Image 1: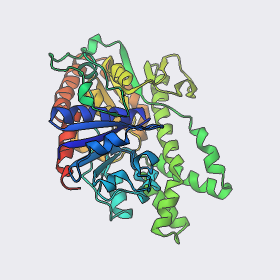
Image 2: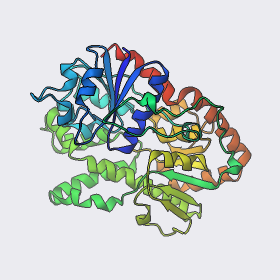
Image 3: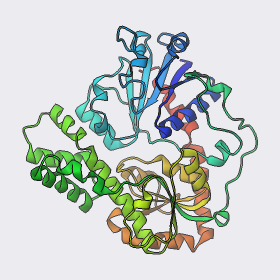
Image 4: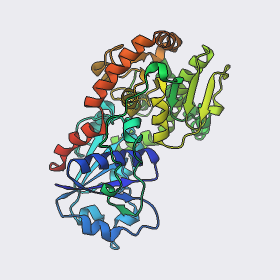
Length: 419
């Protein structure tokens, strides 16, 4: 199969991921079209003309293109991908319980990739009929060599041939800044929402439900190594043992605000801990001006604009802090991008990370159960720039060989003929 469809949705990060895959597949000899998802849409004929029955694969993230969008259906209501026998590979970058509704309406030829082992297990337990690929955490991106000499893909039409816009990256590689050349001690790229924002969702069904939700949060706060849906199920099965599997899926979908509450809680705590130790931190993303911290004089803040801005900031930082979005058996692309951009990544642990990356080899770990130790880890690194440089160099060399979108694109290819 040599024809691929990818999507540019309104979610900037997913748009970015699709662009990176499009670049790599064109280099590998595939014909690729990028579909810009928006209303009004005038690209239906171009899509149909491009598709070759049973010889075309669409690759999407988080169900874009298969969310019952009218623009991808015939006037009779048939999904274009079913009508023209297109295979669908869907990479979901959040927990599957976010997509209870989307999972009801899938194309006939469908395969799902999860980025965390717990997500894959959830699918096997509750959707055994759905075909899954291996668990595949996302890839990272090198800012200086992806954007230093070119431009990101930008839409020029509803259905675009990205080979016309790929930056010329045939020149010599642009080296990263050394640790001593970097102006930012610690950077964190990601937004923040005060956990109190989610309190109305907890209280909306009365005191009994409020207590139930807080019981789950207390469980996660006490032991943050736990898979979130496992904790959900333990509490639900104890309090509501009569629920059917279908009802459990529906209820977990209605509890996604707890997932957001816990991830933002620890995200805020990690930054607060560094600030209270007078360690300068630069945050990129919305909401950090609202962080409730006793000390904020060492916090600098840039509103989020796009992924390229985040990557540029990482490429200019000594340390790139990561707080996992509750992936306990996976990894986040922020870690791999930190490695590729020559920063030392300091992250909380997951079973996947500790299996593949020993502490101090390619990155450094801290423990969510012992955040008070985080400032010491960061300070020790900053005080030993030569050791930091060796660590960053090892990580960057490894990431270039194993953790880029080029490698990710190649790992997906065997699935093209299997869907």
